[in-house]
Image 1 (spheres, helix red, strand yellow):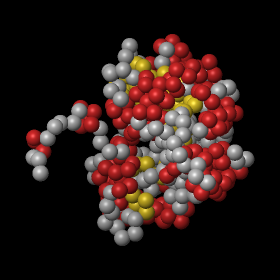
Image 2 (image 1 turned 30 degrees about the horizontal axis):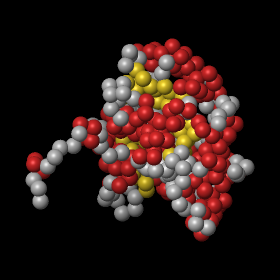
Image 3 (image 1 turned 135 degrees about the vertical axis):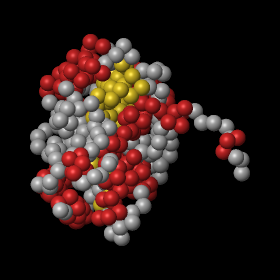
Image 4 (image 1 turned 30 degrees about the vertical axis):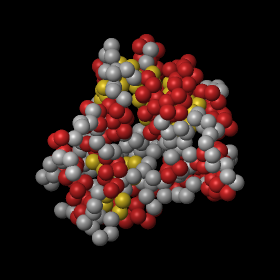
Length: 392
């Protein structure tokens, strides 16, 4: 075996970016004999039966050969039309590319947008993948800190801008908080993008998973900015098609052309089998989605109620997405717990509830809990958390 100190070195990016905290926490060993996993935001539902049958039919009928790098034309058109119904912006199929999940859509867009040293505004609490992907693409993530409401102020947005700012990533409903920006914040972001000619990457993976009102797409409020927005979607959360690894990006034609060229040299195209399933999913009347969101709303309400009365715990009611993000810093201080990472380890090993550290999302003193776990498991997890945090 070659000694480690004599092997060729990795580049700086590979040396500085670690594995996804979500995936690492889900894989962490647990000393408890009966763990409840509240780490990964993976809906426990099966995908719609029509989507499953369409994927199987594609296999049986041999529709499994190479396809276009941009994705099946019919699916590109279906995604474009679906987005237009939701945000009011007319799109041609040529404005959309199918990708191997929402992550690939964001990563490939950043690779085609950023020059080395370009800055990207990311709003804390943030999905760690945003920061890591900016780093992988040679950019500089600039973290905008939130207020007590877990949202940025217009002043904090302005303070984060610099001559090197190239893009902004807006994720709503947010992972991990479930928060949605109000009209004032959205209007200010639109103003900033116009004045500084910025790209806006709109991560709408949870866009249809909203609990207390209609979806609030950014472009419905600022349609004139469609020529500088990248709208990222995924079939993972909306249709529970996580393992199918299928997402999309809709953007101005020059950017899509560049992303297609990139895909042709990397993944070739996302799974053709998954694309046939996705076509069937988008053709549905919406009742499957409404039923799943109704089920998730019940889980959200029960989990929120379970945590709300605990001493030293503050938890906001998320407006969408698949998570609760309780603030636990007061409880930690009164119980001598030094970090939320230490708390995560105790919860995992002492009571068998696997959670994520808020520090991984740029918000130390919080925990992220997934409500997408099976209802019975979620109830069990909440009971254990009540016993742990409520104990004298």
